[in-house]
Image 1 (cartoon, rainbow, N blue to C red):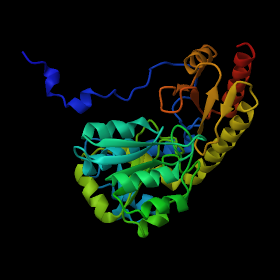
Image 2: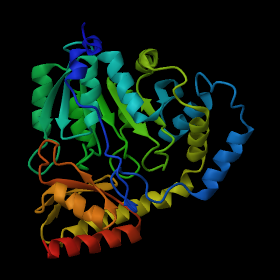
Image 3: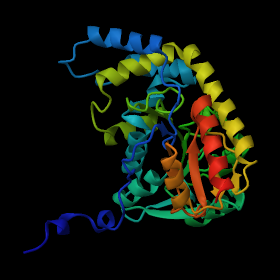
Image 4: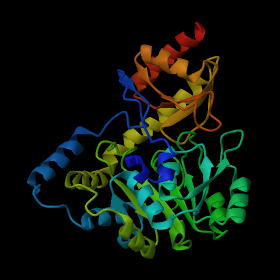
Length: 357
């Protein structure tokens, strides 16, 4: 008798699922979350509105109010915006709408591993372009790959997870001017660092921008993401997206958060300040070599093997990310920005660990 697994596509069976070890620690700095959380006043308003909503009914098929608020926030027309269940769904939707068997995708790496996963599941072929020796985007190499491969998609994460590097407006324009397929820029961390590329959408209809409420807006648990593109592209992407993927509560939460951005702004500024403080202080610890970042996280090279440093920090109560299996990052860990108190305690723990290694 044939195995039930024979019904699974070979390209799915060949890959490893995206996963996160379900470990716990008093200080969780492994998922690039907003360490300050959402202000109580915003949470209370979300709950107040949710309690008056009819939970027995499906949410709006088209979240008109949210799209209008996103239009005001981004400066892009609402018919050029798609919202859904986190930016991961936006990634998956764009890939499903564009990639079929043997389609080519240019992907700078190391980067967010979900891109490669969804491309492989769709049957596409990833053509990786490694970052340069300073863990920055290698623009000449990306341009060369696009010219040679003629990809259906080029995906750029800026700020890049996990390295924190960014692509500039002029660099992005160079890639767009090659006019080969869609150029997708994932700006999950835009509010923390990086340039706003929305103005380029008017001149480059093959540009697609992805964003999320999970990072700066402290809504990781509510899963809201959105896509900005030419209205004709959004119309096609919507055909590949599951209906009602954005639940009622998350939709309300996103609307309230957009209305009260001024209350979150000081927390986002605090994250950036703490990131810069961590960069400075980590660089003073012998055995660590942190890399400048525009996100709310840092990667640092470590003289202690990453898996061992991970366990040593967990013993001190800190959960970081061991990224040593990523290309180019065999000796690196990623540390998310915590609160000032958490960051101070982390630095003390690291000083102690490296002093006694």
